[in-house]
Length: 355
Image (cartoon, rainbow, N blue to C red; front, top):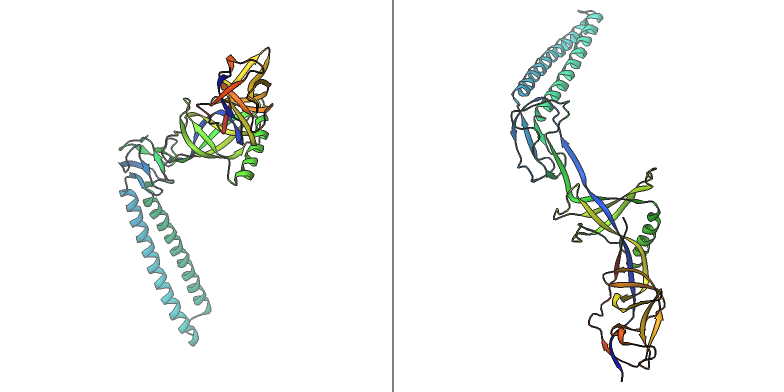
C-alpha cells in the first residue's frame, strides 16, 4: 500500500540573500540654533517638538537697542549725503569761475578732493547702516533648515551672546535619515557585487529595509550612499552609510535598528521548506518522489535558512518533487501517494544574521 505524503515541486526563482546588520539612525541634517547678536530673549516663536520650515522665526531678541543703532546710522548717512550735495554744488561753481580765471587751479583741485572724500564718507555711512540693519534683522532668529525642532535650551528672559557655546534649540531633518552600519571590511565586496547584480537584473537600486530590534519593518527601499575609506585599525570595521525614507518619522536619530543589505544574488535559486530536510549520520538529505511514485533519499548541499526555507546549492533541479511531510514513514523505494503540501509558497528573500 502506498504511503500518503505531502510534497511540492521545486522551482527556480530570483533570490537574494541579505545580511541582517545592527545599525544606528542619524539625522540627515542637524542645525544648532545660535544667536548672531547678543541680547535678551523676549519671545519663543515655535511650539517645542513640532516641525518647522526653513526661514521660520524661532526666537525674538530685544530689538530696541538695535533699532536705535539703525536710526543713528540713518542720520549719519543723511548728514554725509547733505555734505556731499553741498560739496558738489561748490565744485560746480568753482568750475564755472575757473573758466573766467577768477579762481586758481589749486582751489578747484581741493574742491575735487573734498567732494571725493565726502563720497567715501557716504559709502562708509551706507555700509554702517547695512550692518546695523543686518544686526536688527538678526534679532529675529530663523530656522536655517526645515525639520523637527526639539525643546528650547534657553528660555525667555535669558541673556544670549553671539559667541556663546550653548545653542538655543536644535533642529533635525528627519524626513529622510542616515543609517550607519559598522561592519568588517570583508563584507563590503560581497555587498557591492550583490547590489550591482540587482541593479542589472531589476534595472533599479537594490532594496534595503530597516527594522527595529523586534523585526518590525520601519522603512523600505533604503539605498547605499557610501562606505568609509578608512578602516578602524583596532576592530577592522568600516562605516557603511545608508539613506532611508522616514516620512512617518518612525526612525528617531540615535535609535538602534537592523539593516537588511543584499549580500548575494541568485538569478535562478532553489528553495525548499525546512521540514523537508532529513539529517542522518552527518548527511543532509531530502525524500524525493520519482515519476513512478517511489520515494528515494537524495543528498543535498544547503545554504542559508530563514523564514522556514533553505537555499539549495546542489542536489536538486527545477521540477524535482520533494516530500514536505510524512517522510518519517518512508523507506527507500517505497511507493507513495502524493498530496499537495499545505504551504507550498517559497520565500524570495533570506537574511543572514551578522553581528
